[in-house]
Image (cartoon, rainbow, N blue to C red):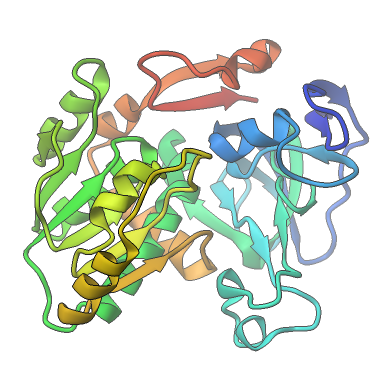
Length: 323
């Protein structure tokens, strides 16, 4: 099979390799790899900024077609779950909540100690595969992260809410806005882009696009920009989904503390997802307009041109590498 591999000990080592075809176990699916989504984590791995040690097949945002295995029919489209529980297990993993692993000994396909889905063939335990209905199923993994964010917001927003602010109109921000619109909420999205696809994607969704930060008490932060995070920290309920850059900004922690205490505020972070989040993410995509989802994918790159998929270009929202 062909596979995209990196040597985690060397920056810039991304290459298209020939590897032995995988042999599925009795509880595993054999899957034809169709596509992977490319995100910031993938680019960090390629630059040598993340990971330790060995050769790794990259790719954690997956889409494939079942060849054989239990629980699915040949030809079914599936996405693979990324994280696996740690072997100890910690209290969270022992309860099946491996996305909340407490000791950090989890493994992750294409990220941490497990080969990913960036190959023309891959295997996955049937219990860690989720059915999808179209080629936009490659968005299930980022959508699962947002589903988890909304699940936690529901638990923490004791008196409910009618509007939400999403900061950032990248894939995570747009998918967060999609779920808010599906829930019938008044959704506002903040991003700095004045042109390109982002404003149109937000507006065609039925949300309101802003280039200056509006004042809302419920925030899903999806930029990872410290300067934006600093401005929303004192809001009533803030979910952080973005991984921050190295930008350093001054923050009045005393004022943040005062605002959180006096407003009974909550700030929490979320990353990764459980199997139930993937299943709900698949349902979210099924309810969405497929043309809108397709328009989120601003570049589809063939496998032979794989290096181009890891470039950051103006106008990119979501880049997908076709396997």
